[in-house]
Length: 307
Ligand code: NAP
Image 1: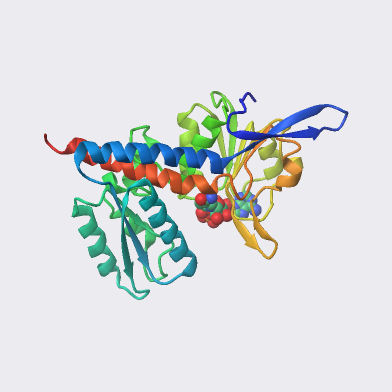
Image 2: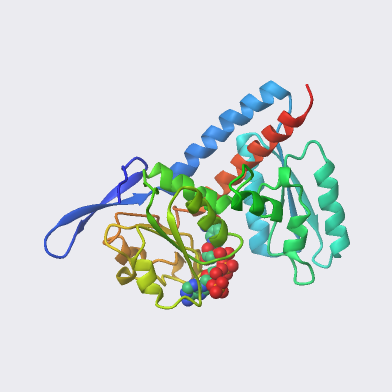
């Protein structure tokens, strides 16, 4: 697997048999900081050109503490790059009609470039239905049926933040995806499915694995690029990884001994040619891509306004 070591820290391995090779630890924090710096610059240029600031509206239903922290982080990050955050909160028992009315109102508001409905929503609400109401031009999470369809058809549109962030990590690490065997473990609408589509669009040969996949380790061992988003603490062991593969760990599993990915980083780093750590790999990219999507949505809306 060819890659250059632009945004990674080399880690030297003493491979069995005496050979020594280095593994790139892909530095998602540094890459995300660069994306944010670019967005800050481009938001300032957009604002100077149009007299408007891009706006990001967040919709949070209920008081789930983790969701409140995520939304707060997105608002803070918006402010830092010059995007105006609009914070909308509804009680946990808000009827669907109230959330629908709010989303419809935000669809029509000129100051709002992007809308994000924080998932999961309380059990009496249908998250797919609600996110589907967001205007495709404001769908900065890239999760509406129209955005998913545009991605599947290879048309321009807003892409889901985490898989789009993984594509940036692969590009920055210099990974050549043309014809590469890529395996995505996990098939969620949020990550696995759009990730597979993005890899396919980049001309990789893509396999999507899931909980019913037979002999998962053998499937993983085929991968030049292995991307894991399952939500099981350090599930992927070194013997599931082809020597020299690039490994991207999307998992975020919190336990008493800290935050871990879905990949056994300590063991796999001695086998892979490049790997993302957890924390500091994929995680920081998600908000960076949300900010980039919000600017893209503002640019798209502005280009549609008659001069
Ligand atoms: P999800 O909706 O729960 O999907 C998990 C997927 O993993 C499903 O497709 C499931 O298969 C598959 N799976 C479960 N157990 C498996 C097993 N033993 N072997 C193979 N596949 C298995 O989760 P998600 O939303 O995609 O998130 C996955 C992980 O990524 C979580 O840890 C989440 O926190 C993390 N994540 C991180 C970010 C970030 O910003 N860094 C963003 C999104 C997600 P089935 O479809 O057959 O059930």
